[in-house]
Length: 313
Ligand code: SAH
Image 1: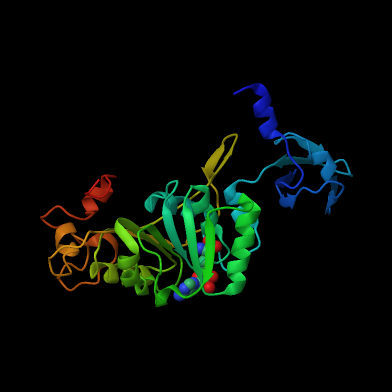
Image 2: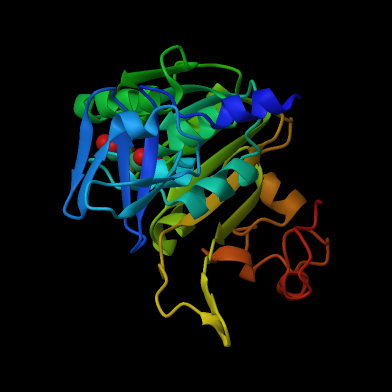
């Protein structure tokens, strides 16, 4: 790649979304429009000074204050875009992409779509996404947010409908859920996913996660995992190196499971084979406190302590 190409990729263009950052680290997300200007209480920045500038440049506002201009990352867009429904935090979006193993060309069904933050993450990872969303206004906003990020023509379609009533798609690779009662989707997902496909659900409470796990135990899904992502930033300055005082203490739990191919064995057979919770001992255990079974299935607490992955890896 020539130096010219690199310079060209840094050059900011009319119509692009950029992030302005002032000396106090305040951030402003704006869309560049030739001939217009951006007003803040610390001065006015002419868009024409930004268009053609290099990403990472420092520009001067009308009162002589400095602003740095960069293109926003997906995480920055998600936290700043217009939203009606609560969006999934970037730390959880990242984990969903790994846990659900989202890859280019994957056929993914997503519900509910909300403001489209998760849609953006799925599409950016290369998936083809169909969304089901109850509310027409949210579906429209998600579409606009996705188009704002990726332009028109992304492999994305949102249908205004209730996923609890059923799924029309067949042979899906992944189903990703962010809605209150995902256990009501488990039966539909067994039909709509291909064998080996992954169901991934994001839930704010462990009660809901437990209820989902209970439903998964009684289904053709196996290898269930529930986790949360703790994300703590650090203050690093001279001799003061410590965790930041504030952190987002709780967002939600992620549960994933994989659809097994049908067998002749009577259900529930997955629990016995893979040591999932609810293995006929009648419990409604939460997370990996179960399954330290002699068959070696499941994720034992000892494994977790040793920092080892689930037993099937
Ligand atoms: N993950 C989204 C936020 C989703 S908020 C984001 O990152 O932006 C949850 C959404 O689920 C809401 O928009 C709600 O309208 C929708 N919803 C709730 N129950 C639903 C159902 N049964 N079928 C389809 N959508 C549903």
